[in-house]
Amino acid sequence: QGDWSSDVCSSDLQRGAHLVFMDESGFLLAPTVCRTFSPRGQPPVIKISDPHGRISVIGAISISLRRKHLNFFHQLLRDNANFRADSVVQFVSAVSRRLSGPITFVCDACPIHCTKSMRAFLDQHKSVEIEEFPPYAPELNPVDKAWGYLKHGRLANYAPTTLTELRNSLNSEFCALKRSQNVIAWCVRKAGLGSALE
Image (cartoon, rainbow, N blue to C red; front, top):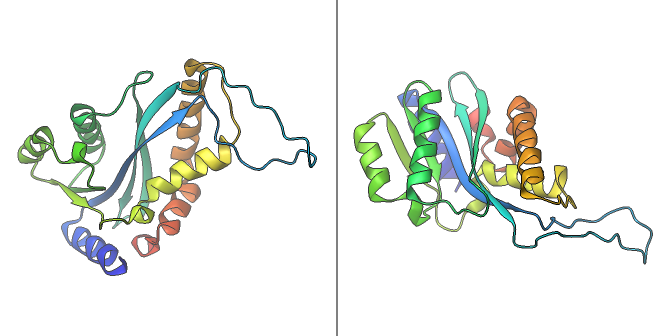
């Protein structure tokens, strides 16, 4: 896995490419329950308005290997919707427009990342490439660390009453994450990709 990350960084540095890590996740009205400081034997009661209410999100961390600059991109779907091939292609297209020059997207081997519509997009945009993580290695994706930072840190035990409230909170948290180079860099280093920042 170490050789894989070194090879990817070396190849994209030669291309002068942005390295963009991508992943999908979901945030629920049901909270991510974590340890609290409540007295022993008196666990806090968290009321849930709808245990199945969900907002799906796709996120990406981009690294400019030459400038060592980091960025975070995200997109939220409508309430209780799932990502499909067309919505992933739309996100890849939107990120590609924001970044100049060659781009390599790195993602897992989920079928929605390897569809006819994605191949058609890549055929039309020769400067954009997609690279897959090694099998069974989700720990290499810094976006997965960003999900953990939000779910188990910033939004731990958070139980919004409506999806609108959850959506507003998510947009606020993602905007704050986008402004924090230190947190994004922490996600990259936690994924064992610190060499990309050196």
